Image 1 (cartoon, rainbow, N blue to C red):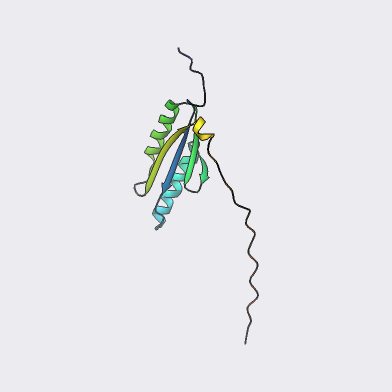
Image 2: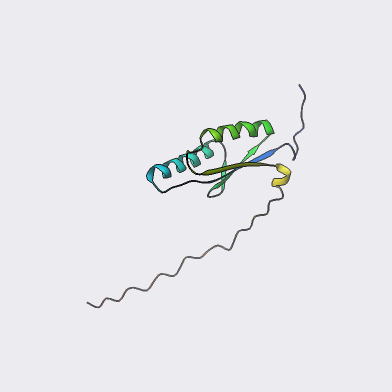
Length: 112
């Protein structure tokens, strides 16, 4: 059995981004179920509708792509893409300043 050395070009990162309709109770339930299944399969939320997963190899990546395809809701848009660990290391993230709570509105003036 050939032993392949793990390196930044063989390790993969899988991304799933989606825009699912949530206009009805059924559609919201489907979108929630989709997110829960992603988490159960080892994905973590990068942004609300972008999830990522580390895969040790391209073969592992293909297995997870097949799983995600199996639970894509019937409506909406789902995109799956992959990058190498080397490419992932070049991602630059920016986080804004922590937002401060808004001031409480003044009490209403009652006339009567």
